[in-house]
Image 1 (tube, rainbow, N blue to C red):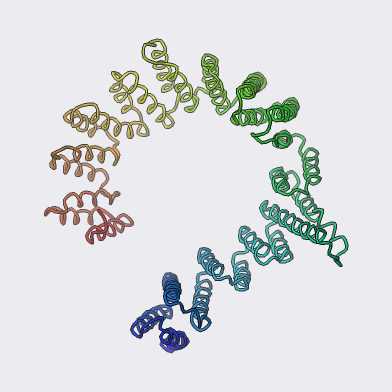
Image 2: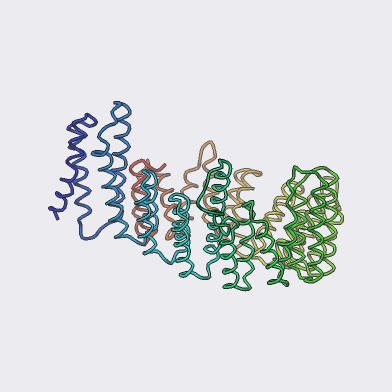
Length: 589
């Protein structure tokens, strides 16, 4: 193995001699470089190769390049780059190739090699690298797309990009992204050819390319790509729709866009997404254009939606219609146009409610629109209907509670009683595993509007299943420390300590309360750590580390460390050992 190391080192002699001769490095620095490279080379000839050894060697050489550049700028010497920098670059390339061969499954390594090649503008090397990468990772469609983009945008070769994408499609015939990227590439190629032809015409130059291939100029190649895709995957509306936004990025595809929409209507007459796409096609005006233009376009769009909900009166179709109305409403604008959009949205909500069963999302959106336009009573009526339709939904109850809470206030006892009754109903209907947001919402409201009932909320919550009671116990302790005296918080901690299950956050909350005092009671803090370790000592190395950090200046720390080593095992023990080492060296606080 030593002969290979010496051979590789001998190849570096010329650049080292040049570095010393031109004065970029001293003799002592050259010896240091040789020593470091020798160490790296010996690591690379071991029987069991480590990827990190390659990466460290590569990073060292890259850092050396950076240092050479800085010293050249300082000295003003910019000669002998072939003998120095390019020799180091070749060595880095060689190291990357060896690493990618040995650890070919690591895509990050390949991409690091690519970034290095791009930085030094080595396009030929990049082309070879992509070819090797695709042989190893041919099952990854994203890599084929990246390689094709490189050929198209960097090498300026549409032929190579086309060849790569055709090979990728043969390997992955059902992949949408490959089809769309091939379509985009052909349109980009046509766009470039059109711009070139326009320049030739402006300069009145003669060209032997009669007509400049009219088929390419008009995007007919892209049309063939689109036709083949939809024929090979009939019934796939997602693929069909994916071609539309690509077309709209080019100014010569009007006829192609029209053809795609026509095909959509013929191939998917009973698909809600088709009707949604056709309706949204009319919405092209920007928000800075006149209100009359925007409203005219919206009316055209709404007419399509009305036809759609007559033919397909499904919940999904109404949902798409409503989503469009809400999006237009969110555009804002002057009061008149905003009022008309709000009126239209509410009309569609009402019609949908009579024609189909509204989902949770639709009810919540309806309530939100009514609330935004100030129709609180109507929003409450919708909330009541939502509860009847989805009485087990936590999201519906949460939306209804928020609506009722915003309508209540000081001096409005009737509304406050309504909120309390609504909260009790929500807790009774919603399953405990989904009810935590409701408990938090009820707690927040009580803290603001009815502080006398806060403790009752906590007492009821800790009787619930663990998914609710465990986090609420922590909040209970936090509330007690903020709103009551310390002795009250200590009593609550002792009482809750007897009611399992508990969480690590519960113990940490009490520890933070004690530590926040002007004179922390160390006895109680230690007792809390012991309680926490009794519950979680076998699975939470962070608790042991926090305890050691607390006792680092006392004789208890070694004993705690010994106990932790006995209690922990597996990955938890490894995490603890690493953390303890950092703590000992002063890197963790």
